[in-house]
Length: 282
Image 1 (spheres, rainbow, N blue to C red):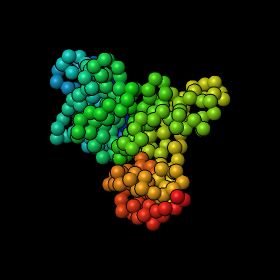
Image 2: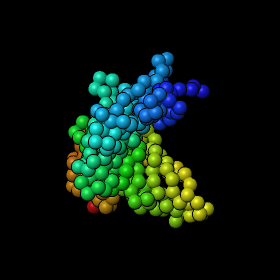
Image 3: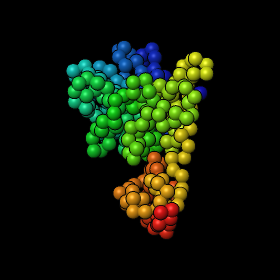
Image 4: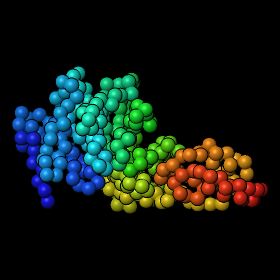
């Protein structure tokens, strides 16, 4: 075990670690009594990441696989909590909001290109969001807590219901999608997801025990290879071909039946399967 120390104060808390364990992020009380986001590097020690301009508080909650991108929340000059993204070259950057006065970042994809969290909209409601180089995107009501390695699977909670979001399927209530697995239990919040997006963890109500308990949900393979009936209507026809064409070039672990051969990319190989079986079942 390694004791990471503090920034001079009486306490510290770590929240995330790089893939190789050499970089840890969290928050620490300083000698002056304020809380600051920190980065700890093996062999170097703990570094104060500061705050947004004129802020008084910050915490780092997410980190990329190589430790180069860090995300969290900091107060700004107005005392509002704002999501931040930090890198060595750019320092701490305010990621903005959906029009309200608050936002918070909770996790970062492995390559650092996707940051997830939540933000208030102009009406003051919390919305799950993701930040990319294109800006902020509203994923629906609730809060996002975790993201898969490639940024394609995001999980969180909305109105005490666990949800999953993917680019191809959008927002999904896990209690609806996996109702057949629950036996009357309820998944209240999803707080973590495996690198490939398959396994989701969180807290729910266990109907069998009458308790609120941690859960592990195996969502199974996101794709099952088939012979070209993409829309599962029993006929391989133009409709199936169009689904593959519209998804052409997409990649990632969250692809569905449009990835006919399940190689995580929609390409010529998938089109060829549909064409080879064209007319089957019709």
